[in-house]
Image 1 (cartoon, rainbow, N blue to C red):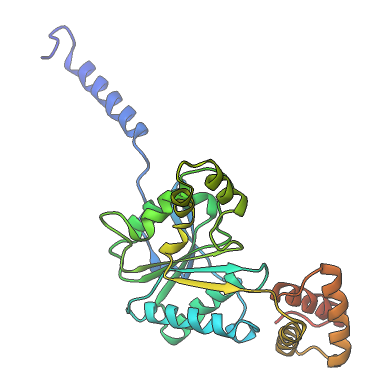
Image 2: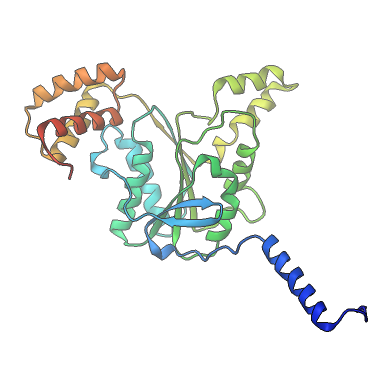
Length: 290
């Protein structure tokens, strides 16, 4: 009931201030999704938006050596999804620097080369995994197919993020949208350190159930694609491919000798080490990047 002692003007001003206060408390409006703005985006949860990426840092798929089987499996899965056919979420796990994230970006490029605009690549950072349901809700109902990539996914401590991700991938009432596929890369097969799994086994009342709970997240990925350390022959093949693509004017035997020394100083052989060596060699030879 209106207080008769308050003039109408005062009541209007009071109502206006209350409405303005409520508007300030309300969460900001989520901007519309413009998947046509680019072929690749980075998800930013605060405020929620997709940031278009004009140029993706990627390596051509033909230059990825020593991972032929992994390349074919992931490429086939990605092309099926881009064509509107059923496909699986994929976990790429294993040795550092062997081209896990490079392969995802390369497969995305191939899909869009064959059918321009068919597939959008969206990168989500590990620390933003809890906002994945919000991202999926934004993408739900969109016509364009979307490939979400979380690079270097792992869980270092006791948190509930892995449970949330587990339910998102296949569980829940709504489930994963038909136009969305989720790829993750990790150095760990089960996304968490062995010590964390062993600790659960040693302290739980039912050790087997505790272990199953910790490793069951990886079961939500239909594809497990392993990457392993390469031998010297494969390492040379990687270097030869990169060097040929840049047209480096150097004798192959001399290049291989330098590559061996480079890998020894790095303590490993991998696609990343090969790429870093070729970049260094190109700089010394005065060859600009293509």
